[in-house]
Amino acid sequence: QVQLVESGGGLVQAGGSLRLSCAASGRTFSMYAMGWFRQAPGKEREFVAAISWSGRSTYYVDSVKGRFTISRDNGKNMVYLQMNSLKPEDTAVYLCVADDDMAAYWSGAHAVDYWGQGTQVTVSS
Image (cartoon, rainbow, N blue to C red; front, side):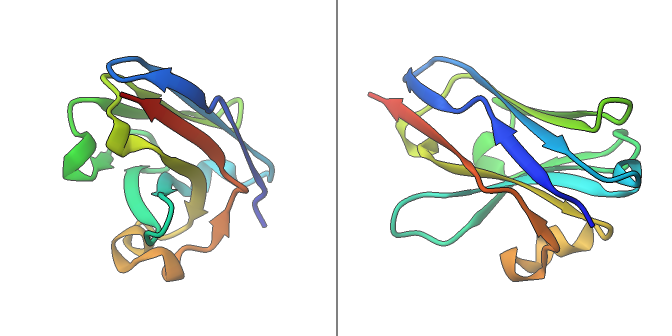
């Protein structure tokens, strides 16, 4: 069982930066592939980024490549999403996720085991 709590969202102007954090509970945190999804108003949940349990492999949706960076600290049970060069289309609720199988992230939101409550990111133009 994993519980996830996000923080770090807020309002930022286009071109600005935000760093999201996700605190995870559970003694087996280091065995989970972690990730971030986002959901904009009226849209389905969208995969954003994922990181392997070791941190050596990362994956991003094309629209954020080169702007967002996912990282993790297994010693602190933390996952981060550094978001730079933010655009209005990045506006969404960002949700931290965990699954013991990275493949779940490619299968869609329905396949992911654990979700946080989300943190709002709003980018003004």
